[in-house]
Length: 146
Image (tube, rainbow, N blue to C red; front, side, top):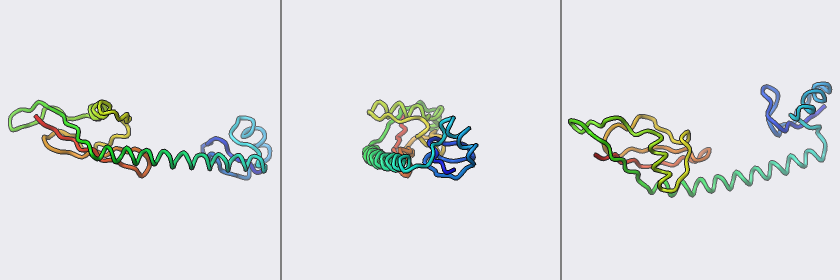
């Protein structure tokens, strides 16, 4: 029996995938537990409609991410830190501090989207990458001053 997966199921199929499985497995497990539906013309048209809708949403989200990327590339975040002898910085700038500074400027960005390749623990300018959307990465300038 051919079924259309409506939820991801580990090692079996992903949402939207059409797969041929044994009748008993399809009826007693996949369909009963809501992982799949029988492959019919009606269900295929629903699937195609959902895929088209998802693609449209992806285009909108990517467009918004590109707009945010343009705005973020123009700003510079300043952090004032305490320094010791020889301008040695005490501590470093954390992801949370960057997130909070972006929130003050009106950008709500989650901590896991901010990429710090190395810790920011010296005076001067640093670049931080922010993953806004797959294939859309913004770079924010960080200026550390004493």
